[in-house]
Amino acid sequence: MKDYNVRKNITAEELKAFRKSLEMTQKEFAQFVGVSKPTIERWEHEDNTITGPMALLVDVLIENEQWLEEREVPVQKYGLRLWYMYKDKKCTLIDVDESNRKIRIKNYARNIMFRAFGVNTNPTYEDYEEFLSSRCFPETRDKIKIQLDALGIPFYDPMMIIDKTKGRMAEDDFWILIER
Image 1 (tube, rainbow, N blue to C red):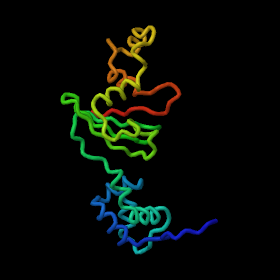
Image 2: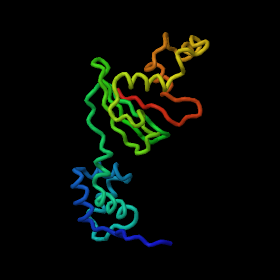
Image 3: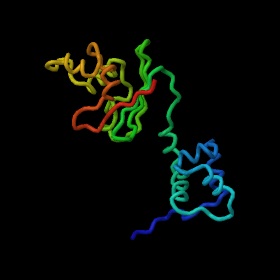
Image 4: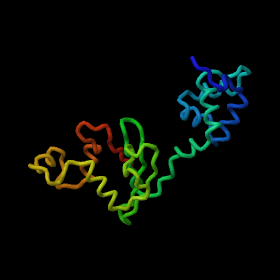
């Protein structure tokens, strides 16, 4: 097995200082790293060193502060928020102001194939509308009224279809999570 130059342990003080540098409470930090709040409390107050995955995680995050900044979710400024998902991974955040026809996005996937708008990092509202249409069955589909009736939708509207289907397509692991 290869050997790696990583820390094998951290102290309670180091863990607490790291958590505070992230401006997180114990509860928030516990949710962030996937453990219980009592576990964080215990780690921060025991005299023993902390070993295992937590020591490695803290070491990696300290050395790569930009990683956390890149993954920070901006405050929602518009009324509609969509997440373009691949399986359970959030790939692109799309905030939409429908009344003023504005959108803003943030990509969390490095691979452009997993981004809602590919290489386009500043899409227009028209690009957004085209994206929505691409996540629905085509408006020209034969016997479309039957499909719309099955979904309980009175007319063809990509957002209404996505509300019902989550933008899932056949043999495709991409989908859309809607937050209003």
